[in-house]
Length: 560
Image (cartoon, rainbow, N blue to C red; front, side, top):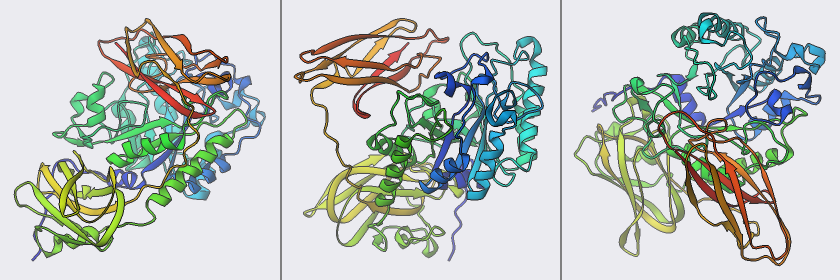
């Protein structure tokens, strides 16, 4: 007998479900900032400087495809207003540059490569435009028309996108301190996107299908609800609200976790890519909490990905492939209550995406897995059937060790995919306890994995920040120390800035400090200015201490 499971709360669109399934997308930040070695331009940068003589968009897409990315979002216009295709609406574009003798069209070249490799494509078109004379409160209507004209110009051109199709439009909410407070005609823009591109995902500060996760670390919160109340969004939305979503939210909105593989969003030669260990942590805090990871890979001044970044992408792909090589719970016997035979427990380990388990008894609900023989693992994966809405609010996992049930780990939301890490155990029996749920829980999968070992490089001993966290008033100078206990030889180290809830241009100005420790030198006292931002809030960012590209220590800075 089939017993129907009714949908609960706001439901995802097919495009949202597809993005959750894809898990990984790539950001491409490239433009005048690349050639000026900066993060935010002023709009006065000379187009003559833009000349990536070896640019190879096909190579970008090939590398991304081979390393597991399913979508590429190209920054076509950043805050400086420079446009990477020959738009009819401004001369401040690639046609004013020497690249391809002024005949170049980067959007077209990336689109052709995306079409060849069948990779979804997204468009980043910055609403804030520091170059345009129309960007003024006195000319709001003119600027909104200008922005809309470029949207139409791109989205209606069958040569752009993957076979003319765009999967996502990214409308960055960033606007520098002191910039004109131009009001945007969002609804008109959204209507145009839907008219020209159908169920295209939209990232914005408003109540759209994609929202910012509230930081630029690539970390999602736990709990993470993929639903929000649109009345609580906007440019002044609470960062904690964005990071966790809303259990009572009325629209389904994916919290997209964005981060750059390097400290900056644009390429800077003196910066290094994140270590594999850092990328793995980001993965478990984004995809592992049920939301896509949008990882930025910035091309260099030649128009190529840096060799170190490419190497790291392949290492990251190899790690994920090894992690999922063997699902240790596949075919395991599962016992517990079930709604009916159509929602039986065995569907949790049958390996089929189309089957699911559900039960309408009171909480807590206990599911017990018998693996048949002892298996060694340290990760459990749970998946909800989001086609019926997000429901589970808390769970925990136990394992039986020598006849005694022990805690493995606990979490809050599950969502599309929850990866819960615990201690490395060798056991035959596992319990999943669902303790809180908004409606009867519906799961599609339980799986177990063993994380691959990470090859540890030789750690630099005795080099660390004197404190792990510091607070400073906004606009004031941060004072901090680095200590070195083993100082018999000279040493070069770097300090770079990793954005958090505070980002470049708002909480700090991006910079790299290169430190030279002489033999016998045990301490360095350093400073870093912060920016004075509007509003009564606390923002954070991180100082990364690296040696030879390896992260040695990290300092959290809170600015308020």
